[in-house]
Length: 133
Ligand code: ZN
Image (tube, rainbow, N blue to C red; front, side, top):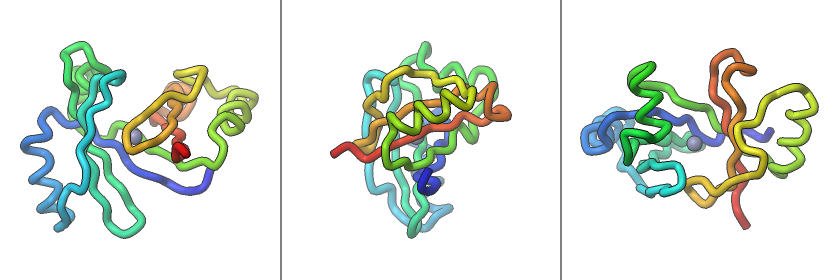
């Protein structure tokens, strides 16, 4: 793993969360993107090396909607940048971590991603991400 690439925060409404984070960080949202396969709208902020991803569900059945139903809005995942996602998935699997997807999938922000089951990571959902070439 190279570094924390971004921190994901589940929100009910981007329409109110985006202006709030713009005020909080004193910088504009630089990108919004819908990931149909994940049923999410995302909004990105950057402060120097640090990125924040806000996630809003596009469907009452989506993972973010279900997360908010259970836990409320808040910290959703921590994403680590990796150089070779397949190798890292293999390594973590051999260490006993449970992957939520067997193959890297297309995420927001031009990334290949894989999530680890939070039951094996002290309750924290971990995302691995690799820039798509
Ligand atoms: Zn993410």
